[in-house]
Image (cartoon, rainbow, N blue to C red; front, side, top):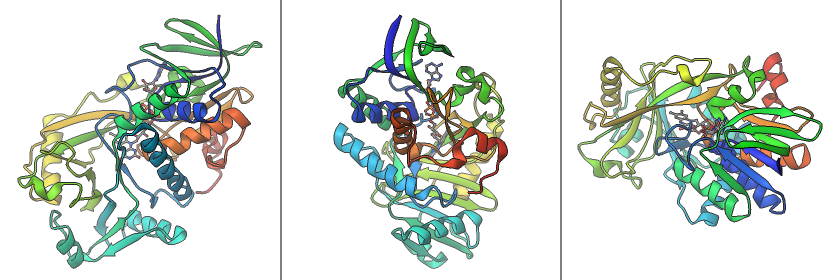
Length: 382
Ligand SMILES: Cc1cc2nc3c(=O)[nH]c(=O)nc-3n(C[C@H](O)[C@H](O)[C@H](O)COP(=O)(O)OP(=O)(O)OC[C@H]3O[C@@H](n4cnc5c(N)ncnc54)[C@H](O)[C@@H]3O)c2cc1C
């Protein structure tokens, strides 16, 4: 049977980064990444052109130092790969004064002294006339935020890992993982591999590989939609930021045009949460698309109210909407899952955490709240 030091199961957002950070730290080890699809693909939680990136974390104060480190690692990956991954356009939050997400963003900014700008309604209208602004709206610009080109990030990290000596197999499915006295046996569609340690980064497929986590993980699905502005020149990255917009109880997010004809603008539709990805909603129905178009134009009046492109993608989710990053089987298996619709921005720092836990048993880049036990007890406050 083939023997290696570490197998990484799933080379998507977290797995590509874990393989890269492992290869960067220990190029002497036999490292093997196994991915059921191709090197980048449409099925993963990262698919769909771009992801928002923020440093000011509205999710809670434990996250901001992770995001600062993540940004450094994104920059390192850009330099190593020669690819542009970070969209350095700023991340603008707009909503009614006192909205909990805006307050949490401001808290993160003040806790960590982050570069930012705040704007009242008049300032927002003057600076970002693309948005419809209500009298009680305020804006917060996270200057270090913006977006990421998500597929480029995954391709770059996997490519760097391979360049540093790791092996990667694509189109190979992991069917099971067993801990034996000899090591961890990874059963794949192309035969078994024995590893000293295994990283499981299988995203919304995680419970198929680690069924013991089924009580913690569900599969949530989100829609991405793109609309054509009548004046595309107002939505180029030099004039338009990544954004989150809360208006009348509807939350939307988006990024400037990357294709030169449309912008990503995603008013959030409620889609069913399911136990297994096979049961996820297959797409949007006409009624949902009409609603999304109405919301998009209400927030950005220059848009034509009909999506020119849309897709749905799934992520693994926990009840607390914070990840599970933990060891299983005496530390021989390390898992990262439950990214809950906001994990991409953290991918390099969680990859670093996984690599450190595999190599040393611990990492400053994970948090006690992320353990499976903590999720089960819901005992540690954020
Ligand atoms: C529509 C949408 C919008 C989002 N927007 C944002 C955003 O703006 N900002 C942000 O930070 N985050 C965002 N997120 C969240 C973020 O994209 C995810 O949290 C992140 O991509 C999850 O990464 P992952 O590694 O867990 O899963 P994935 O990236 O899906 O990786 C899992 C990989 O494992 C492979 N795999 C699974 N099972 C097996 C197996 N048995 N054998 C071999 N390979 C296997 C899969 O094929 C896949 O490549 C969004 C998510 C979605 C779905």
